[in-house]
Length: 340
Image 1 (cartoon, rainbow, N blue to C red):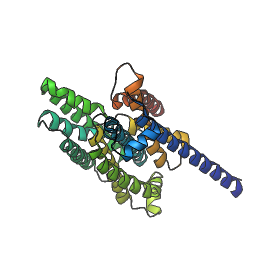
Image 2: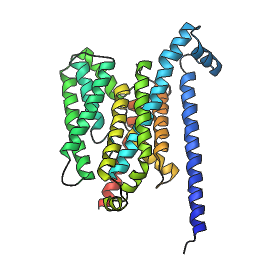
Image 3: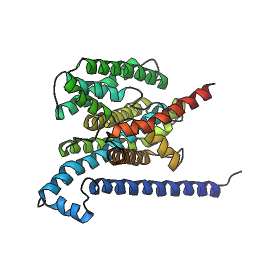
Image 4: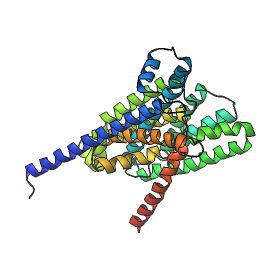
């Protein structure tokens, strides 16, 4: 029989591991963020960057730091946190590693409105971002309504989302085929998921959405862990299943919608962040913060690779998509073997 001291030692050891690894992830985020500010066609030392941020004396350098690098770095961090937390919450809520916004059609909902605005309405700027936010939330509501039955079903909502994603992707392809050739490049650049063209005007609303939604998800994490035990356990323990699910889903959808509206659908970050975080901090732990930091690291490091480590420059979504494809294949093979 295991005594209380052994259980307590195990708990302390797991807690210590969680704190150390989360601290390392946070340090990595800060280091990579600093690298994004320092490195480029012109290398600026930290003292120069601080001086530039405090004043506008160096006009050329101020443009590079304040207009190009600062919004790019902040967007990478915030969208990485948004995709990482949202993907992890979806996977935990539905109990399925395939329940990622990339897979079940949520990001496609935002993308179809953006492509329509770019190719058909000839719009650009903030209006495209708000169209993406509204469309992403609306399509998510449609998926939820179509998947409703007498009881909540994880499998039903995932299958409905996959079907909706296939329909929306077909609609996007049709619009690309019918569009004028000189408009297609803008739409494809948005669809690939890119940090190019992000401005400081977009950062405040993204930051507010991320802070608000992530804060609520962290507050609801205890209820989420109980929901993972099953509906019967949640009922016995007094958890309001419907309200908690709706709250978690809405917060996750807000994260996805606002992040996608700024950078486009950065592939695989939501899909990969949760499993990577669980693997390094330990399964069974509350890994929301670790998933947020992992998502930020994935987006920033992939952007650096896409910009500087390859013969040609590629949007961040291309690099993250390459990272996610092998894991998806591995996951499908593992699920198939389990079902056999």
